[in-house]
Image (cartoon, rainbow, N blue to C red; front, side, top):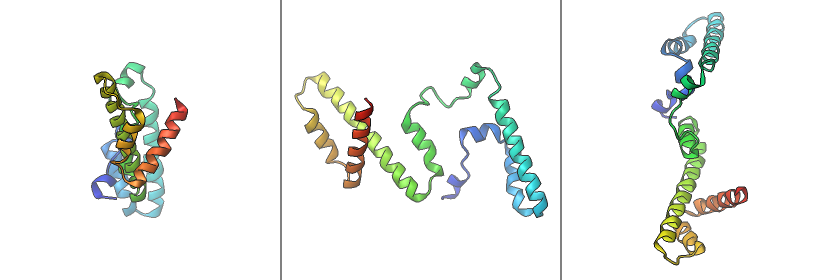
Length: 152
């Protein structure tokens, strides 16, 4: 992983693991083994306590801490997970992101053609869209289209 990605914290970790706990974690490898055990458990205990305190507030205050109003968007979730992936996982994640973006593009295209009165059928539009993808992305697109079609 790249250095800046390795140091990335999740939104929850940023809330429950303040800077001083990160400093203690960074120092753990440099102390005696007995102290490493104690400090590791102590830091995790404090993070657990902070997590309990974080979720022990009223809903209004908790909602103010949420990332944004559109936190249910799977693209945002995948983009937030991506920095924590290995290289091979990141490749798979990129394919998923490309499939979602292609599907969004297709839906936008469908909306624009139906509102403009064009006679482009879904099969022709899908073929045109798929021709822009690599063979791996086309296979992934077909897989996810079938999955999403079954869910609808």
